[in-house]
Amino acid sequence: MASKKELEKKLEYARGYRDALVDTWENIIKMVTKGYSSRELQIMSKTIASDARHQIETKISELEADFAQDEIIDLDEGARVDAPPARKKMESLKPGMSIMFREPRAAKCYQMFEKEIAGGMAGLCVSRSAPREIRDAYEIGKTQVIWLTNTEKVDMNLPPSALGLATDSGEQGNVNDEHMQPSALPMIYSMILNFLDGNRGGLVLIEGLEYLTSHNTFQSMLAFLQKVNEDVKRTGSRLIVSVNHSAFELKQFSHLETEMSQVV
Image 1 (tube, rainbow, N blue to C red):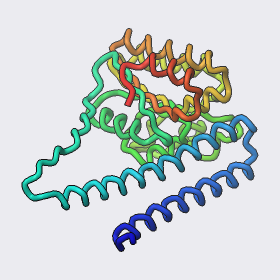
Image 2 (image 1 turned 60 degrees about the vertical axis):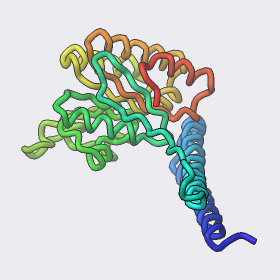
Image 3 (image 1 turned 180 degrees about the vertical axis):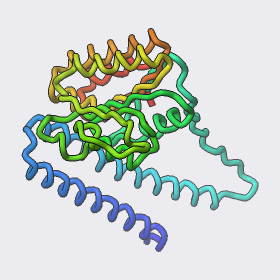
């Protein structure tokens, strides 16, 4: 018969599984009612499903670690137990380097971006997330954000400066955020190129390759990423990319990995 502690762990796992399922279906219902296209629903559904799997796998890992710790405690006092190897700490990006974060939901990419910006590096953020959401969650100062969005969504979350309206003086007064349609890859590339040429040694963050792919062919998005990466190397700059790998076919994601200096 299972011990009380084992039953508590199983119950904790069941609750995590339930919460992940509930969150998944609630998000799907919200998407359906917002009138997204079938292609957008496909991409976003894959993202939500990946989030659910991530939550469950995280909980499983935690429980497995607990069980392993219990086994270590039960060993004889004189027994030697090898500790798991420590995870390698991510160092600051070197000039010309690019890094890709495999993550269901963009977070680690922004954490690294925030850290580098805090060190005085000039930055440009190309994101599927609205500028206001990014600024509320991360300290990026006056870093310009290019929001990948369709025109009908422009007035939802952009700050007044991005809408061409007057702003109060102060920190936000000089912020010049922009919005770009995801299908306008040449224009997006042009803005990134202008930044790199004007801020050699700077930092570019691109989050939303799945969204760009849903509005372009994969090959055109890959060519866009390749050109950006080449200019990053040419100018001695840095590139951070966030990708939900489950939204791509295995062969497609392999192509993306090949372009990066490092994938974590």
